[in-house]
Image (cartoon, rainbow, N blue to C red; front, side):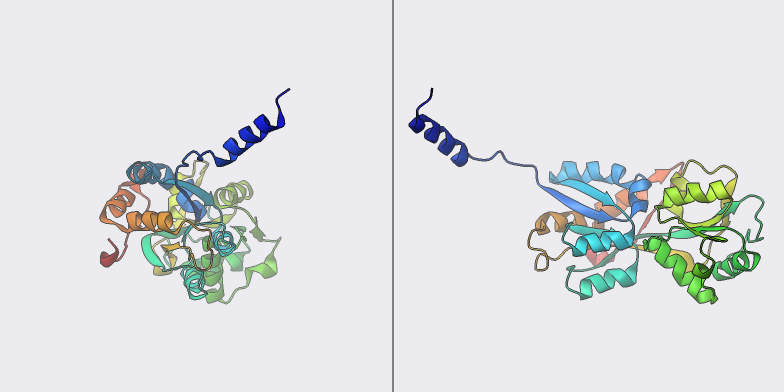
Length: 274
């Protein structure tokens, strides 16, 4: 049996042995559209090879992503609900918000188009017609960036769709892909970001019916989480990823991402950030 002195010596050696160096990493709290579209699968290998920093993405609705970052469960925020993003920075939770890229929202629906909105460019008018007809509409209902934009558009029409919750207005409480699947299953209209729609495989007889309204513009922003608010964040790694995304190299990479020959995101970082 080993003596006590030998056991103590072994234990001390284990305690004082140098730890194996771990690969630096960051957590990005992100909206779902950037993940579901495949953008991160395309971008991250470039950044990780260049920087040696591993990026772990938590893809949830924008509201949940912001809440997670408020809980200090992330190093960088990449979402698409500008007022909420600016409030996050104003509250001292983020260092700075910067425009990163944009695309747009569209309203999709079945080919038979029961509300007759096909070809319309006025999103509020289209939503008003859907409500007047009592045509089924599937909403994420999850406080995501898409849901926030949808509710803003409903507010502009003067219609409160939640009064018809469970009737023609169906709230899924789910992500965009699941909401599209549910909507298609019930023959309902839905609003989605274009990137998710292009990447979505279960389109069946659905098509884009309403597009082109400037109110459907969809801006994405990037925000490093403040180390003053969250001492445990990897501020250096988060800033390195933000700087790369906003650089000429990162912006070019975003512009080069395509699905079925279609560009999904359009970089628009300020020139001084690149």
